[in-house]
Length: 178
Image (tube, rainbow, N blue to C red; front, side, top):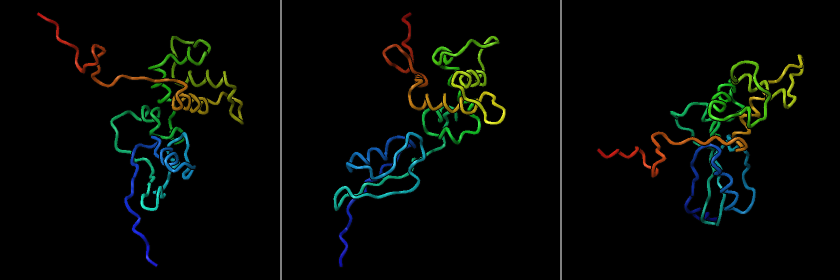
């Protein structure tokens, strides 16, 4: 009983939630590995044969130390929303860059401006999110809901790269003639 040499293995390294498992399923033409909108679905290294001599490998996303703020990592889908201990800072990050009250059609704030907590409280009130015991607005559920809308693309956050200039897409603005 001889075992044929399996041939080359084609690994698919990448960030969490980048679509590695979806690409593998598409190449195989079937749902061989589980996929999810949230990062972290693939938990271990998996090998599947495309042909008798070509193996496709799927692995969990690789996360390298990042200089990006944790809030941006959450909004980029690199860090799972469910694992956040403080979702309000990520909502504040999003709210400082998008007009959330208008986009979510929230009631006007009582004070001069919106805090992340007030955004979440207003969203919880609008959606009817209440805590089980005290029937207060469930701001944690509202914060997670706002972050999920952003992660799914229903709230679009677009940012220019550092050093970007609108003039001809150059990195630095052109010098003025003397």
